[in-house]
Length: 361
Image (cartoon, rainbow, N blue to C red; front, side):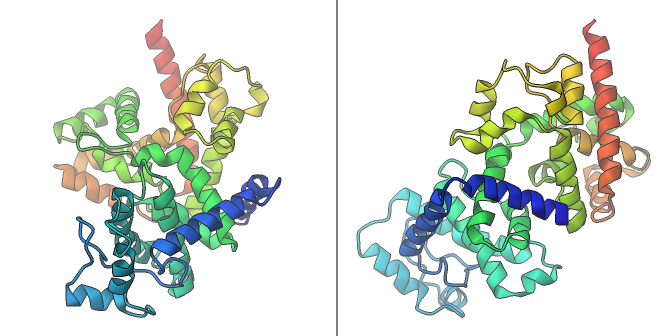
């Protein structure tokens, strides 16, 4: 965990080395949010809704009692004061509707850790997620983001550093949270996972399809929050560090330095020459396979495939429905070894690339 802490600090220092612009910007955003809703930055947070979907203050006395608990000043008074300036616009309404959901997720996040027994740490996590929800107008806040933000809060004392590390991480992962009524953000990765499993373990893939799990939706959580809930806290950070080292690509710097989305920057970096030695082991395998000009499958897909492969016998013998699949995979929570998982993922990746290359001949 110490090496992960140093890596986060290094990212934060790179982001803030030239000037204090980033810190000034994040503080300005936070102050702007606080002007709209003064609970931001107060050391408190809410877990009950404060307005209705049409932008009116909640009048339910039970809800009012919960939202006002431990907070100086009435929440309903804050909302009425905001409404005194006229009807709220859609962005403000949507943001205010999100705040209590963030609060509900905050109290569930890493709740077994002593760190979160302190109210100030819970409120710090809520503040960062609330401000991020305000600035990200496309995706906003989605369940699972608190799992990704939590390590930043725990390892970085400065809130601005934690905010910007989380914001940069979301530039890379926000596509996972972009959902519609007809699709989920990780749908492409789920499709890739199905293709990989079909190649490396066709019997398991056929069994999952027979059970109605051919869409691999049971793996959404693993991909969306990068295994934060499948591994222990320390192992999940160790896993992240290994994943990012293995798939390191110097082109990824464009994601963190420019304001455009990761997808746009990835598209713009296609065709640029890069040194073989600069890349991580996973990326080097892709380059050897002649895939350097295309977006490769992320290592996270092969990590899930590795977990499925490890549990293949149990899934084939005991799973008689999707509920059984979910139960078997839930039983691994906290019992996985990060190093073993990465080693397994690399082996499957190499095997998949070899079979894919043979199929193209």
